[in-house]
Every structure is written in structure tokens, then in C-alpha cells.
Image (cartoon, rainbow, N blue to C red; front, top):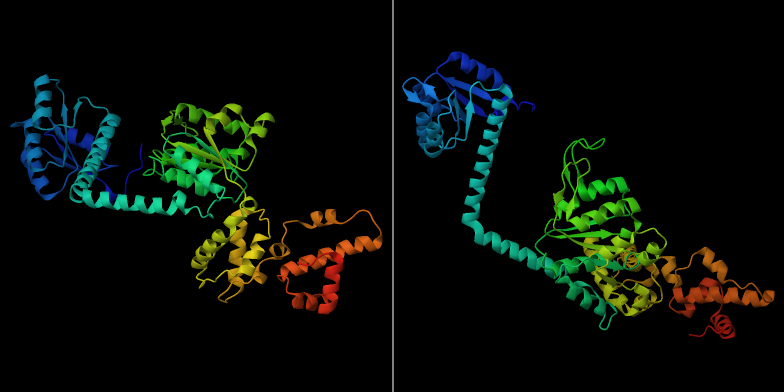
Length: 484
């Protein structure tokens, strides 16, 4: 039994019956969930309806002077929003047909009625009235503003397509991404599963969004889930939903991302991090086109396109028994590979310039130009973290200086040194053979090269930092073969 609503919000019910005991019995059944009014005759009921809005009318069929159907026919004409229910001890088919055709009766309840059945019937009648009001209001809004709504929708779609289309994937002319984007644009038109491979930070999600907004599903949702960010148990609930009480903390029904993406696209990032147990459940969803919420008894049909992405070698994981082969072939209808930033160095300048604009806007910074010396510094670094790392470096540089040009000195030491190696890698680069003098020459060359790159080969600054004269620095550079 549902908890009663607050008194001021209770729907109103009018009981019309010439027998006082019947009135009292219905009042006792309904008064916890509804505000109940009673009337012993049609005249008394009319007077009350003129003074008081009523949601549901329960009317006895056999009353002195008038039948319940005849009275409710009048109610239908004067107070059409009230839901009308007849209570009768007889099953006369003519009465039933007349009630449906003339009085628009919502339901017949036969005597002797059961309290639970009566209560459920009135609850359903109140819900039907509420839905009817919402539908009528929506119909009116749609009739008066269909053109406006259509225009707004078209404008939003055009704006999204312009913001996330393939043309918005920043790259240089002749970039390796041209071929990837061209292939993605072709498959976007068809409902084929797409698997996007590439290192972290290369822009796999950006490519997935472009596919969505170039597809027939562009008016549907585009939802994203990082499969590596949450454990399997929560991932299942997040993607497929759960029912109230399915587990501790499930206080209400929760529709999963697949349900929310119905008619659109689901982007599953880092799919290679999922466990074999979860992979079985995902495979069933893809095969059957339906999800079963955690704790649910019935499956829910879903219509989505799946784009998956990973930085892992999925074929190798299949061979190692870590990823299901049947799921792999379900996801890899078409495989696209986004090359890392170090393999498309020509893309770094346009991407860096765009990031300066975007990050400056986010930070409320006036922005800055990227001089050639700064771009040279960016080009000398291999960017193991790809575009995500480049964005972080630009944000750091903008925050550290206020000038009109973004100086290379504002970048971190890793970028200034021109390599992505850590301490262990540097130790591995040290010579393990040769005389002490030969080994010291190698170390000296490494120090000189790092300092020269960091100062963009400005010999005056390098000499000052290392405590050398310009002549002494020039001599070491010649001896160690470090002339630019």
C-alpha cells in the first residue's frame, strides 16, 4: 500500500450513494489516500460539484429517481475532467453499454467490492486523469509551437554538427588523420559497430563524436562511459541500470546509459580494461538488443550504436585469453587507428594554437601568440601523453606568464629537455664501457645538449648558466660535436 500524500495534495473523490453504510465503507477504504466527499442523491452531488473540483466520482447505479449512468452522463457534459466510475450489484449488459457510450464510464465495479480492488481502481483513475491533463497540455503546446520547436531542434543539430564534425578535428594539411577521418566519415552513415584504437590522449572520443554527428543517429543522445574508471559491479549498473532494492543503496530505479542512449550512440572508452565476466553480459546486450537491469525480472529493448575504444592491443589480449574473441568481432565491425602525436609532428603547431585559444578562454586569460622558438621546443618533444599532455603544458605556460607571447621557458623541465625519458632511462643511456675520460665526455655532452635545447641554442645564456665563457663553451661544443 502506497504511503498517503500530504493532506493538501490529496486528490478528491466524490461518493454518490443513497445508502449511508455504503458511503461510510468507501470513505474508510479511501480516506488515507484521498479527500473523500459523500452525497446521498444526484441533487446533493450536483451542488457539491458546483462548489468543489473533484478528481474521481464513484456512483451507485441504482438510486431513487435516477440511475448512476444517467447522472454520470450529465456529469460528462458539465464536468468532463472528473473520472467516472459506476458501482453496481447488477451486470446488465445494456447498462454497461450505455455507460460506455453515453457517460464515458472509466470502470465498472461490481458489488460486493473488495477494499484493495476499490483502492487500486481509484488510484488508477487519478493517474489516468493526471496523464490526460499532461497530454492535453502537451498537445496544445505542440499545436501552437510545432514550427518553433522544429526550428530550435534543427538549429541545435546544426550547431552540434559544426562543433563536433570531422572538420573540427584540428590537423595540418596532409596529416595521417586525413585518411582516418575519411574512412570514419564513410562508415558513419551506416549502423556498423566501430572500434577506435590509439594511445591515451590521442583524441579517440573526438573521433567518436564526429562519427555520431555524421550518422543518421545525430538527433539521438551521445553518451560516454570510461570502462576503466569504475569496478565491474558498478559498471554493469551504470550501463544497464538497476531496480530499486537490487543492492544496498539502490533506493530507486535507475535507467542505465544504454536506455538513456536509446536511438543514439554509446561510446565505451577503454573497453580493453573490462573483465571476462562483464564482457559476457555486454556481448548478450549487443546480440539481443536488450538490457536486463540489475535486479530486474524483464529485459528492456534498446536501440543504440556502440563505438568502443582502447589503448590496448585487443587482438593480443584475445590471444592471451583476457578478452573474448566473439565480443571482439562484435565491436570491431570497422577498426580505426588514431596515430600518436609523435607520428604526426606537423599537427602539433595547429593543435597547439587551437589549444592556446581554448585554454585561454577557459582560464579567462587574454591569450598569447606562439613564436617559432616556442613551437620548435614543442616539436622537439615526443609527447608520450599526446594531446592531453600538450593541453596541460599549455595551461601551465599560460598560467605562469602574462606576456603577449608564450615563451618556451614556461614549459616544464620534461618538455624543455626535449625528451620524455625518466631517471631510469637516463641512467640506461650512460656509457657502460670506455675510459673515465671517455665516459665523462658523454655525460658532459648530455648536459650541454640539454642546456642548449632548453635555451634554444642561445650561447650567452648557456655560458652564464654553466659558468663558462662564450669562447670556452664554443670550444666544448666543437670538441663534443654539438655545433648546431
